[in-house]
Image (tube, rainbow, N blue to C red):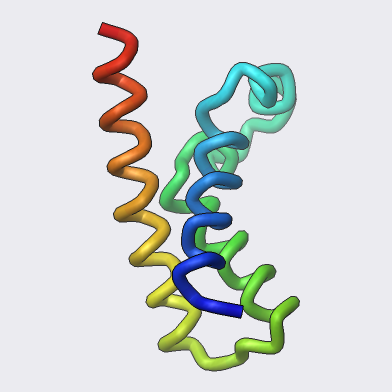
Length: 84
């Protein structure tokens, strides 16, 4: 699978879990910072998705984290702009 598609999926999952109202009750129950920080969560989601798709190269995993972080930043930027 293409690393760019995995990166977009990682960004979407990380933003949904850490920022959306859908998971707000879950975040209140769990006190780990991991579920409040999209960047932190993206590392774990990237590792899980890369291992699922048999990508065991750490350079590729961190490339996915970097691309997903950039995507997350853009997504959050435009979401905040739309709230104004």
